[in-house]
Length: 540
Ligand code: PEP
Ligand code: MG
Image 1 (tube, rainbow, N blue to C red):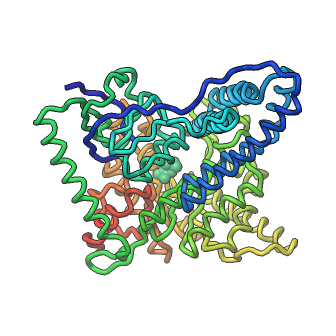
Image 2: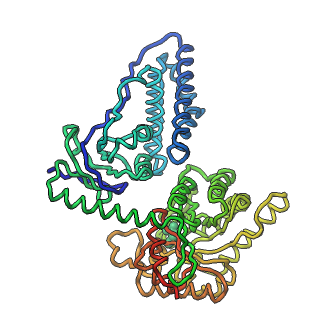
């Protein structure tokens, strides 16, 4: 029995033969050429063929992440910098198209992999993927045997490119175990979407000698066992039955209303970080979006997203949610979320520094651009705007004044927008909870951010792993502040929800319901378990 440990990125139990995936990339031969025009023509034809292949693959996916991914690859093929670099390489180095694609592909891939932002770093796998596709087309190696299996196996590999992953036939894959890989890579995301167990980062212990051996894997624990003994098999079989029963129970909650046993309607909403996450919101049957962390749009790019880019992002979410409520939180940058291009001063204590609404009030240019994009998008659905990190009444009043100015400017220009977009705040500082009565007179709703509220109430850094037992989300002081916030909201005729991680902790649901919570916003995969807890809980 050999035990391999890695990081579980998609849960589930699988048992079967290991099959090592062979990449179909062929070796590139560098050839000096005199007719560079011919090579440019060959590369352009290959780019057209690659684009057609990707379009067909995207259409086969019928939407979703995989389709978006192939579309991104198609855009890369037309990227002016990429195109220009390849043609320049052919002409200046007098080389064949294959060699030029390989050199330029590597350069772009390295450029992405050296970026600080995780998302951008992971795009280097996409560049590799596009370059391999082009090289395969140019060298006519499309028919070459690939590692695609025909009978059900656990796929083992150093790493898999996104297009290798989606090309695999779902019915032949029991699970993925990877030597490398990253949690946020598309392979991990696609595995989760497909509901296939996956483990990444196993390291060199996962050697090709293991090809053909039997293994059992547990995607939630991040553990794979080669040649498991009977005891191990029995244990994991029991766990599998338990997971399947749990999943069936959860599936049965789809389409059911979010109403407590004693009849209170609750909003069970989802948290998202990007428009692509809406897919998971819909898949998990959430009734709305309770927190769109808009700052991720700012973190994903190397410069401030333009008003147009933001408008695209916000309106696409609103459209996809088809009239259901979408609460978009304005920029909450600062503390652990820093964008270098903003050139913010280094702070001694960033958690207590220029973050959230403080940054927006200090940089009204950035704030106004975001608000313009939000109001313009508001005609596409049911938008609610929410400010983060409010500590004082004047901050809310000032932010609302800026919203009013933006609305007036849009009206003057004759731009359509929803005049009645509700404006709420996150209650995530003890100060906000303690003056909730005053804030409730100015806000249309409250959403308690328990992650920060716990950190600031208990003076315990939410990121410090050594502080875990001191960072207690159910500490009586935190619970009292939440209760006070909800009481003040109701006394002033507005609703209050909870959107920090503890909103998904079903052992706390009943307490929150008893306090009067009207809404919960949680990560999409915890929607159905929370619905179960709400439906069996009592609010009165
Ligand atoms: C919170 O603080 O609870 C919250 C939801 O906001 P974030 O985790 O993005 O700080
Ligand atoms: Mg917060």
